[in-house]
Image (tube, rainbow, N blue to C red; front, side):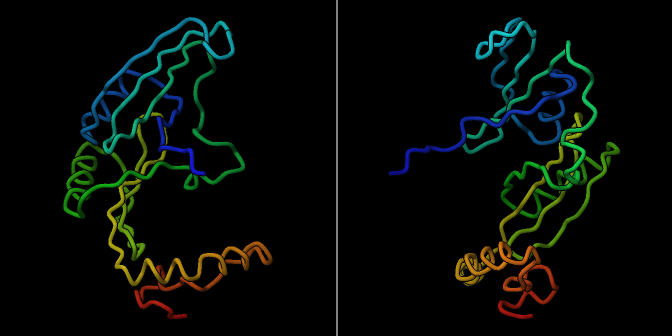
Length: 184
């Protein structure tokens, strides 16, 4: 029996709550919906003042941040053993045109944007928020045939990876430039 009903919110630490709200409003048109501030953590009862902000990123999804003024300054949003490109939040947008407008607005303000990157089943751009969190805007471009081809090989790929720890070639067509399903 499935009991999960979606994501309530995803939470990260931020360097400055106000700057974070303003950045997400300016570049991603995200709506600031809630602020919670306490001097004690409700779950652990630790004395630790914080500002907890909630931002609506569309589709009933909430992105939250904690500003923690008594903790040492944030150095990096991920651990030292994890490449910085790995941990990221990918947000859906409705079109390549929308994605490119956001990219242009960011670049005009000096924000470094990587892409667009063609993943065949989606196109995306990558950038960092004011706290250094890596974000991605993605536009789905998959066809039903592509979705089926990927569904057909997902277990074979996962099992091969589990045995060998080498990238299986079942879906190489996504990034080899051919865009042809089943090409090796």
